[in-house]
Length: 420
Image (cartoon, rainbow, N blue to C red; front, side, top):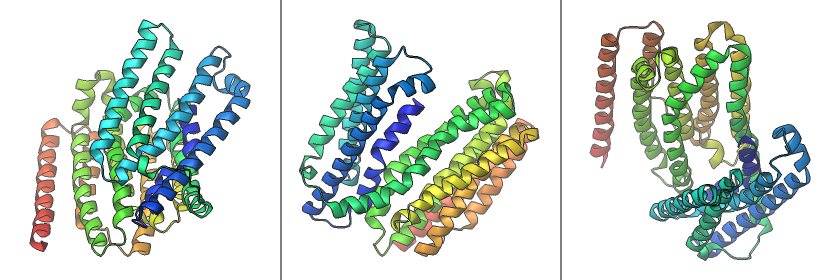
């Protein structure tokens, strides 16, 4: 599946992100039709190149990645699915840029239902095995492609603009290496933990990352909504003030939530897992806090997207990944604490690189005493888990954290109301 994700990145090349960047540049239908159609042509061309290239080197994939020649049909089916997936992924962003969330949700849910139903049919009724699963994905991708094409039909034509293609490519391509690094970081970090720590620590890490994945759900939701929002509004007079308010509000909710999860992490580990997973409580706290830093990075590190310096996104990911690798190796004697520090520091470095650029380029101030206080609460929460503080004291700290967040939210809401 990691291979398919890699190839999907290569097919899309973030063209859909570039479409969002320039979608609001002009409001005319002709401009948006040229923009979207040109991006679609680029997606189709790159998808065909990747699919053909993968097919030509299929023997190398069988030998070095699959380590077997028994799944040749499945691999070829994956290439078909990859082509369909790349195109419908591109088309799926258009309802979001048009502010039609109901259309997006309706198509996504319908396609998902068809994908599940067809997969059950192919696997259980027709007994096609692994190939049946891929047939189900292909069926779902085809339905998604047709529905999104119908929803976006007014923007689709056979027009291709070389000038627009240059703008899209210049914006999108520098982002891709950074996205690939993000994709590689997961399996690479697991391999490093298995090599320099132990299989026990790898198991604890796997459990902790599943619990902390709630932050990734939040990150994904923000990713879907935030980029269209900033692309549409960054030239408006109230953009800086509104961005500061949203960032501050999300900072309170996210950091406060991470602190609460950290304080209850020992109990979460016991009741969701087993006693063997109790040690993962510290990692749950670190990974939750890391997820919060990633969310704040997305909310505050958008400067390169606005200024078309998207290579900075890849640079930040590269620096963070190199630092994370070095710290995982260097801190192996610290055990779980070393793993947590490596992930958190890596995220913080990326956050500071992108946020500082945004602050200087956009002249927006994000620093606020709320962040400092709540981040201090997070560090205290981590300390209470590390030193195995009793539940009663952690509960008191939990109530203090929740109370502080409520006070901060009332303050933000009050100021917003008085301004209006």
